[in-house]
Amino acid sequence: MSIFQLLLIAAVIIAASIAVRYLPGERSLALKRIFAISFVLIAVLAILFPGVLTYIAGFFGIGRGTDLLLYVFIVMTLLFAVATVRAKARSDARVTDLARAVALMEARIREDKR
Amino acid sequence: MNSPSAHAESMLNNDAWVVIPLFNEAQVIGEVVQGLRGLFAQVVCIDDGSNDESGTIARAAGARIVRHPINLGQGAALQTGFEYALERGAHYVVTFDADGQHRVEDALEMLNRARNEGLAIVYGSRFLDNRTRPGLLKKIVLKTAVWVTNLTTRTRLTDAHNGLRVIRNDALNLIKLRQDRMAHGTEIVVQLGRTGLPYAEHPVEVIYSDYSKAKGQSLLNSVNILIDLIIR
Image 1 (cartoon, rainbow over the protein chains, first blue to last red):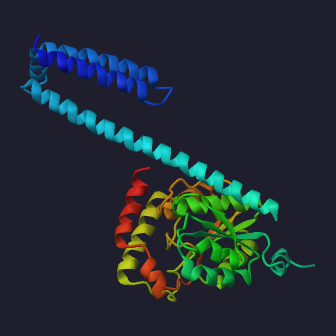
Image 2 (cartoon, helix red, strand yellow; image 1 turned 180 degrees about the vertical axis):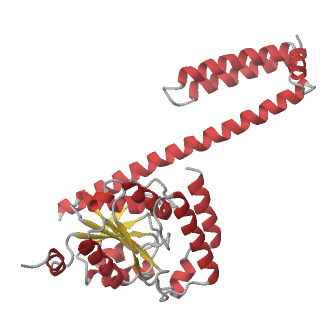
Image 3 (cartoon, each protein chain N blue to C red; image 1 turned 90 degrees about the horizontal axis):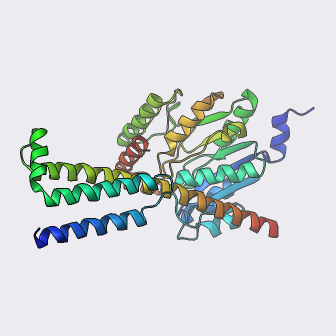
């Protein structure tokens, strides 16, 4: 095993554990953890046996393992972007409800004083 | 015996609340509120986090103020106004723009029409007569918005993004605006259409002053409206 492979494996495990720890949402937490663990396993295998990637790529008719990696990376990035946009929309809606509640409460308090 | 509408009118339309989304309109809001107060006792401005003196001026002119702690957008301000008015027992809500582009007489006519014809919603339309003269570009944008709105709703209107509407409380109770920004013009029609309550369009004049022209929605903003509607 080369030093670079060791470094990559360490990076993958650190990234996944941070993701598992700081991703919000109770309901999908278990799913996210399973996903992160399987991601680690697949990543470690791909780092240790780069030939496997090329074999899988060949099976799907892509050719090189690096190409397969690139395609998966692009798809994952898009999924991440969509998830982020949706999470922001949900959070915006919550902020709106909160601000509205504050505004209406303030108005009630002011009118009671009169 | 007085008819219910004559009775309500003698009490300065106490059953109706005028809801004005207000964001940085210090120059004109005082005049707009004063104009309304002659005919409507209950005027509430939703100050959407203005960073000028809009709120203070509106209050001095006799409006009640509900202040968003942060800027949320016109749709959010309307929804806040609906909840405020419903809390205080409003029977009708009149939505009115802060920039002085609507006529108070039109609002009153629409309210009386809602009362007399038992309508739950009266939409103002600038395209039912030829008093209003929008520019060609503006007309194209507005007509596109109507076309999209009619495409996606069961309602058939001639003008979609007109800020002057009269909505009865039973219809208000059934809607909740989620489009914080400008796309609420279509969203409100979508949601009101789903209630299946009787509606009508009423001809109104939109006054394009130099002030409202300078502040009005740009063509680029209509792109935002379309995209906001597609991505929910």
